[in-house]
Image (cartoon, rainbow, N blue to C red; front, side):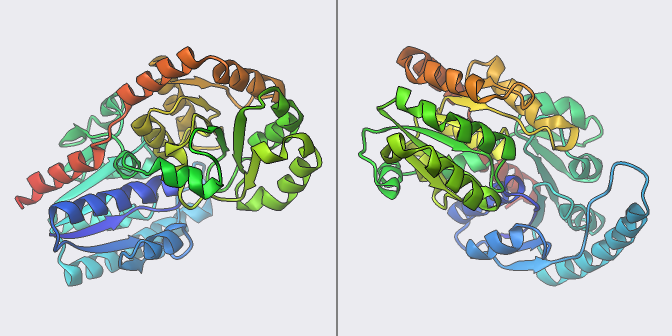
Length: 368
């Protein structure tokens, strides 16, 4: 099978596409790929690192209010469609799948106009602008949440698959996770992470919380600041962390996140779709702090969906304080029964076979 993948801007769009590619490789050992992204997006680094052939088009996203930049974006979209058509005619894919982000707009639209089977995958409860636009042109829309189905009433076909990122983490080696942190295999770990770029509000809360960590002497905190905040945050943390230094890891980024997650007892996280797919696939209880700086406030909808089934607690950024966050962490880390219940609820909400479900839909559309 020949597959074109497109999606970018954030890891939340890129990692599901990579997971789909890996599942295609399992099912079709001779599968050939082309990933189309942008030069500016995170995909320009992550996709080549995954060993997938990578090509680019020039496209930007629409602003949500009237702007001359939107006229320029329309022109880039038209040029992007033309370039994408040329790429598709040369590559001759059996199917094209978009996983979100504005780059997949011209790629998937071009494929639909060429009569190539097309799919978009929506990670969030509330769909993004690009996937909403594409849904009326593609053959199928694959969703991560059943609640998303009603948002695609103009789509030809909607299938509930879950988030393919779940498949990529479910078999992660927890022993390697402990080893990479230099911790004994029976350690209890609280992982605090604000996304690949970090989150200032979570960093501030964590800095204030450091002196309190001695109240949980048997707990190891792994604190991922994000590259942009690492140096300044590390200095602030270390100044206050002498008493808990052996129980606090401050890192800018984790390259083996699935393995570290597999070793995690409790996660404190933003509520991006891929993060939640990872947490539920592994059955990790979580405290979710959704980012308010996203389209349609979709992270709060994501977080609420897990809170409603008992898998997570949500703290909005307006409610976030050092005291509120530590109180919730302390409550859960001293209540094994509660954590166990949340873990079961998280696993019940997970879809570890999500990538396989998506690839089954690709098979159906292509007749392969």
